[in-house]
Amino acid sequence: MKDSTLLSIAVIAGLIGLAALYFVSGQIEPEEFENLQRHKEGEIVKLQGEIKDIIKTESVTIMEVETLKTIKVVAFEPIDLKENQRIKITGQIAEYEGEREIIAEIIES
Image 1: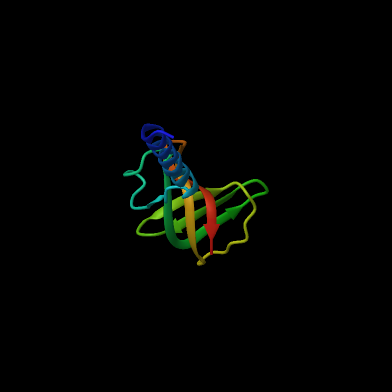
Image 2 (image 1 turned 120 degrees about the vertical axis):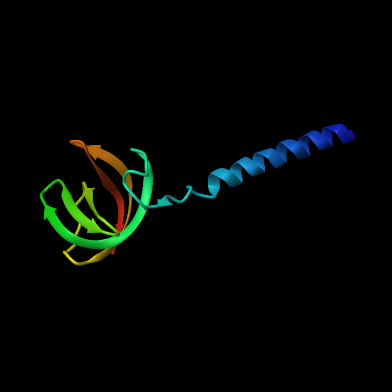
C-alpha cells in the first residue's frame, strides 16, 4: 500500500475513534444549582436539600426543598419521601404559572 493511503486510513480511523469516545463517555454532568433566576428554563441542574413540605397525589408529588432558599420541586412519578428527609435531585428548570420550579428527573435519598 502507498504511504498516502495508510495515512488516510489512520486519520479516518482516529477521527472515528475520537467521535466514538465522545458519545460513549456519557452525558455531560448537570451544573450545580445556585439560584432559580440564574439558570435558564429547560436547563438541567443538580441540588441537595431537605424536604420542608410535601404534597402527594396519584399523579404528582410537589415538594418544598430547602437549600439556601426554599425551592418548589415537582415529581411526576410515585416516590416514597418524607418531610425533613435530605435528598439529591437532578432536574430541569421550568416555569409554571409565573413561578420557577424544578421538574425532578432523578431523586436520591
